[in-house]
Image (tube, rainbow, N blue to C red):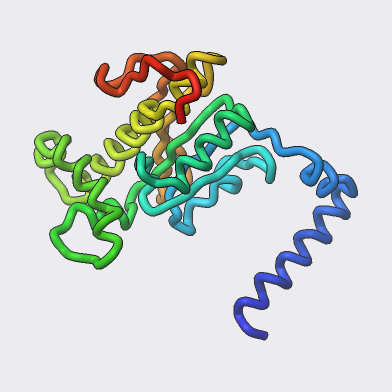
Length: 215
């Protein structure tokens, strides 16, 4: 059997098991999608959102990319964000990174990685903003992990700085924003920051005052 065929075989076994446990399981999923959460996470295969939070399909709307970045010119991310906020009306947006992130580690170096340089350049900008704090740490691992943490916090602020979220805050006082970091060593998620709806932004320049119909 080809290796990829094991995935198809596993899928059939999983579907059969789900129906045996609950004959209406897939019927419910087909008829409605109303998650309370949008998860913006790293694409790392060791951090599966549903599994590490013990949630079921349909409970979390998920977007993943390298190093869990929120980039304001990324139409993919913005489309997911707009749909989650305006159509699904999620109550919470979670930006979740993880310690030992390869994308963040690459951004800390001066090595060229080809096309991905354009992506991780955004992490280098985060490093520049927090360089003094990071350089004071004694070990390379500590410096990496702190950059991972401040990158998550900056991405949460980036979510808040979108007109999409600001318009929702004005309209329905939601969603609440969260920055979490997952520890691969013990499987625990550690909260780093919470931003309630309507919170002040890092700088007033990011606040929009003409939100009607904004995108």
